[in-house]
Length: 262
Image 1 (spheres, rainbow, N blue to C red):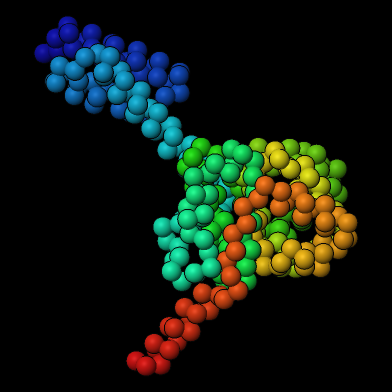
Image 2 (image 1 turned 90 degrees about the vertical axis):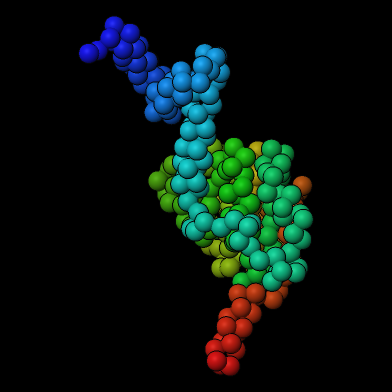
């Protein structure tokens, strides 16, 4: 037999359900009944119950926000610093990289440049640093330099360049991978310069490149524009050298030698 108290509780629950849905609090909606039963059984103070409920809601929202920002970042694959083998890359300053993972450089609108030969971990580090920034509450996005150039060229052809530039401005830090792997067409190089100039001291860039700065003219063309570009990119930048010896190649050689001995 249903008691008047049980009916009253259910009426309250239905009211709470409606309010939490209207307030868009799915975590609280999912958790509050169990928390209420636990609080009632333990004689928990109502304020403590409310604090616990709101904490669950905040945890839920943070988890959902991080998951959404990870999707929005469009990383080609998940990489983190825990999986990076610093022992195989002695040229990389581990302490500086770990410090960058705290994301203070994003708040300061500073850049990070990972500079080294192919196979030395530049992209892994860039993604890992950007992912760490997401967990610190920032929005990040990954793109290759060539893909970015093509996007800007397409936007210009469609007379949508200002709109596209505004869309990129919503991110706090942008990973631009493989700068210098292929020369840019003159129009594309100019658009990339405009992109960098538009974000200068307003957003953080995380660049990976296999070229020394003296060689950037080879891919951007115009020496004056390249000099101005480097001035902006390297100003207040954290430069992480990754070396010239590919540890991917060393690992492959090690595996092959091991198979040969087997």
